[in-house]
Length: 216
Image 1 (cartoon, helix red, strand yellow):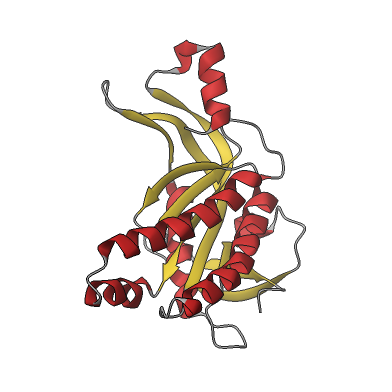
Image 2 (cartoon, rainbow, N blue to C red):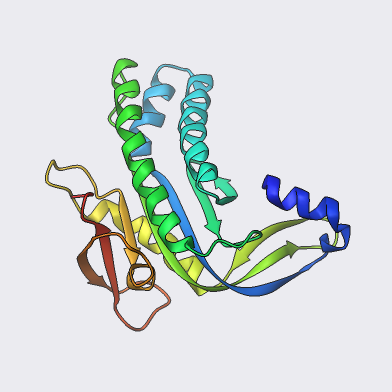
């Protein structure tokens, strides 16, 4: 659990029960684009421990940025990080912080690329999807095992946008590290460029997606 959530539970143990509340929040999904060549490199060298060390290095670097910016890390799914803002602690500028976190992680990716190059590994890229919307946040699961997590269409859209990052390129040929929806764009003070209007699974209408101007 996030340290803030632990403190809340210490003050009020009755919160440790199944159930949730409706909140407007911002969500970030981030993962490694082109992970297969890295995995195959370690497989060919019979070094599974090296692969674990590599993944943990990436997760550690990015998680420090995410937590520094007031987020809750929901979970790790392989090399994917899922995080959210505005729960359990209030965060008025949650959309702005989510996008700025993604931008900072993109900058840290350049340091990670250099580290990978020195180790003789394939080049790494990281893609992030950000969305803002209403969801249910709370303790999800069973009576014997549950997590503090989020559920809702707004969460799913953030994951869909993360998957779209590999379809768009910057001037240098690398992927666009950060994509976010118009729902997020309307709440931030970051100069943005419209990238596309796309159809995503689960939505009938087209979704307008943006990237930060500096992420060109």
